[in-house]
Structures are given as structure tokens and as C-alpha cells.
Amino acid sequence: MVTGKNTAIEIKDLNVTFQDNSGNDVRALKEINLDIEEGEFVALLGPSGCGKTTLLRTVANLQEPTDGKVRVLGKTPKEVRLEKKFGFVFQAPVLLDWRTVSKNIELPMEIMSYEKEERKRRTKEMLELVGLGEFAQHFPRQLSGGMQQRVNIARAFGLRPEILLMDEPFSALDEFTKEKLHIDLLRIWEQTNKTILFVTHNIQEAVFLSTKVCVLSPHPGRLSAVVDIDLPKRRELEMRETPHFNELVTKVRNSFEGGSY
Image (cartoon, rainbow, N blue to C red; front, side, top):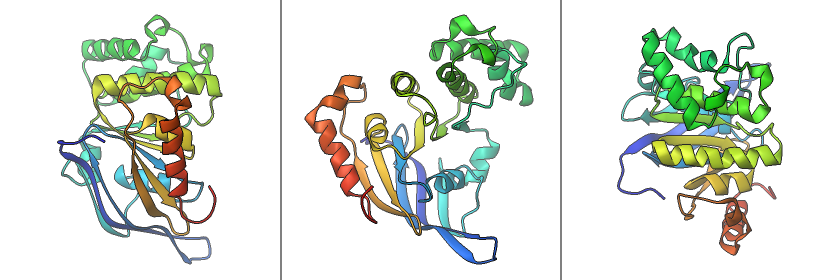
């Protein structure tokens, strides 16, 4: 666990309630309390329907809380969103087919009226960061799924966000590609020291990537446990075969409320 740092995300007594198609109230999140420090890699883990994405969206000011408080970098989520301090990586890369890799990464900077030379400089830097420097002039259709997701990550980092929000970004990929991207993401996190909030339903993925795992249980979504992951910051795939890693996986699995995971 990261210590001695400022709080990046503070969530206090958060409740989120929706109305279903019949007009009935459905509580998606119930009394969530969570503090995340700057530079932490936090996994939101749980089965489908437990409110992981709702919690992520509330932090990002894409969903309003019913009651409770969310503060990001000491400000409201709306203030942080308007200051462009969030970066988003979702399951689908959503790249524009008619733009090259470089132009896809530049797009958010174009929208924000960055100078041309600044856009090019940052794009080159991001391509090197994700290991795609040789593919700058390729089109998305010429890339594998894993490479497209790396472009997506590069685009998110191009605006130099303080908080990176990732919603099951690797769930659609095969295991070999996923393993490679795990290592790539950890390397980028180590280099940039950004705060990452990562949604997943995979226990092993959560343990391998994060500094702590927040386990959500459904009906309504509530925080069952926060498990600190005391693995070294620099991680290797071989760690997943160690007894300690398996102990952490078991600890996380046993913290889930509501039956077997």
C-alpha cells in the first residue's frame, strides 16, 4: 500500500439510486466509504451488477450521487472533469478508422486546441511509452486488438491526467495479449506514478495489478472489504505462481459477501 501521500479520491457515505422502467427505485450503491491515495493502483472487483462501473462513473462525474460525498484531488468530480484531469480507458478502444494511430492519439488535444507542435511532441512521447513508436502511421484496422488498446491508453495519457479510470479494459482480449498488457500497464504506472482506478471482475487480475483491491458485493452494491496487496511495485508474471500470490487471491475471494464468487 502506498503511504505518506495525499488523498486523491475521497468517497464518504455514497449512495446511488436509479429508477427502473416501472418507476421503482433501485439502489445501485449503498453507503460506500473509501479513501484512495495519490499514486495508488486500486482495483474495483466484483461480479456483474455489483455497482463497479457506477462507482467509477460517479467518481468521473458521469453519474450523480443520490447522497453522500465524492472529492477528487480536494475538489468536486465536476471541477476535476472540467479541468481535464481524468483519463478514460474503456473496454472498447473506440478508435476512428480513417485516422492514423498518431491522429487518433492527437484527437483529444485537437479538440482542446493544443498547438500543433505540442500535439506532435506529446503523441510521439506517448507512442514510445506504450511501445508503438513504429506504428504511428498505421490505421487501426492494421493493428491487433491488444495494440489498439495500447493506442487507447496512449490517448488517455496524452492529456497528462492526474487520475486514470479504466473500466474492464482487457476483458475482451485473449490471455496472452492480456498478460502482455498487464506488464505494459504496470510499467507505465511505475513511470508516471498516476492514480489508477481499475474495474474488473477477475480476482487474479485485480491482485496482480493493484496496490489494494476493493471488493464490492451486490444487491445493493456495497464495499465488502478493502484488501491491501503487499506485492512489490515492479511485478513479473512469475509472481502469480508463488504461494503468497495465491494466499492474496484466497483472501480476496473469501472477503466477498453474498455466496461463492
